[in-house]
Image (cartoon, rainbow, N blue to C red; front, side, top):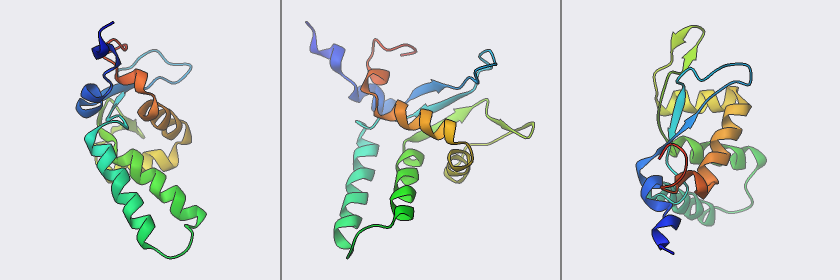
Length: 128
């Protein structure tokens, strides 16, 4: 068996599209492009967060833990297309990504699950 079939890093570094569909909608072309947790970018962010946590005194508050989770998924967001809010195109920015993830828990959950599932980044995965 060729071990390249288990390469999640190459596509994690490039970014892969998470297609967004509401349960009642057909595919309207909305997608969020995400780096995988195995990407160099995500690993660096994780090291940064861990370093900051180790330098502080005392435990993190629940709000701080939550804020770090948003920091991780915003960092893992490369961009998006077809995202509308109130009938207008929502341009991608880190600020807008964090706002969307905080305002729409379903999207946050999908993004989080996608980033941490290596199978989404295998070359043989759908869309790659």
